[in-house]
Length: 238
Image (tube, rainbow, N blue to C red):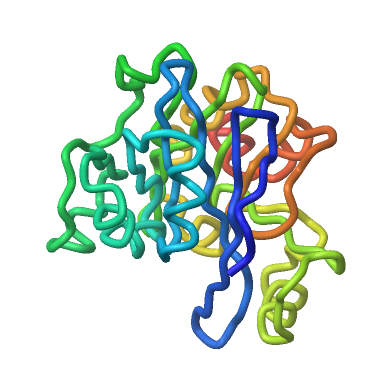
């Protein structure tokens, strides 16, 4: 696994790790946020091996483990074993998809009072296949997503030809940031989706930390508006 690296000075760290899914290969990201209290918030944890555990503990005490989306809960158990004192929050629906997962709280539209000074959040509704909770880190103006935008390009590392073929030919999202295919195929309530997305767009973000593909560090809000144009437009036309 690649090393944990500092993304926003003394506030946000990222670790990339490999994923193999349906014959494709690509990377995902774990994001660690130091809250103003000094404790750590682990977003979409990877498998926590001993080296990763040591690196994280050097940053501070892990207080929260967060599984923010339908496909981002596989390594929660690993994080819980590494940081047994932390509380676990999950996106609604994960408890049905993975009935054996142990958790303390379900995420929603309101941030927990222990991180409300640092983070905004919204549960993205309106899709029949995939849900997630989007977060906004106020101090760094960073929007933190998992699958709501994916950004694969010729510059993206560790991607195999199968994923490139699917994303270029079928979903036309190569060098064209869009929601994950499950989102594109599953919008069922465009009005609910639009309400959630408009809430995200009301935040003053300047960059997007996403789980899959290249980070978006320029024209972030314009990229998001373009990526979500279909659910946004559909709701306006109803």
